Image (cartoon, rainbow, N blue to C red; front, top):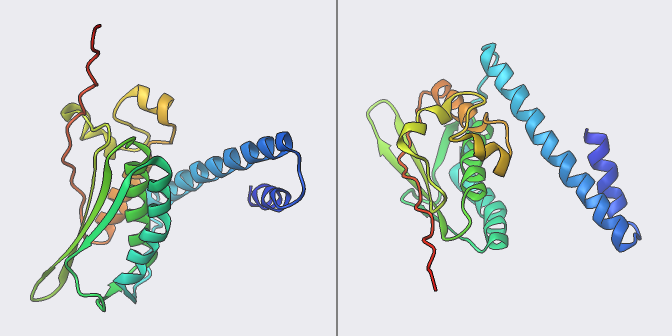
Length: 207
């Protein structure tokens, strides 16, 4: 799959007709989507078998905040959404932990927020609670998306589950993203909670 995507990227930089470029772009986007699905399935398979390992090193929190801005500011702009990050943590703060896994958690949550939000805004809030033996980092992602009905909220953290059957048909995905987030959070000594309500459908005005 890496070979297919790499070759498609090279070809996109060559002289192509409009129709050829359109077909090649479809090929690349489809391959990229399949790669994401494969990675999620492989990742969850490792988690199920207890093979997930944490790589603990010191890292600056600002490096993750910078990654968020560079990736999701552009993605939100493309959808007409406003993206904001609010942090109560000092700029030079460093943490000891697995930066890649923390980034994976955050990006999975933000990918969902962008996918299921068609208008409004996506906000990220970061705060820290200082304790005697350890400090706790709290990350909150808030969006103005379609929302999740109360009866479906417990289900979305289970593997291969989504809020509704129509969600898979409309938005795609494996239903593994949030299950992976929950398992990684637990391994890191944390947890994840959800507060949501289903968005009201716009009313139709008769004329």
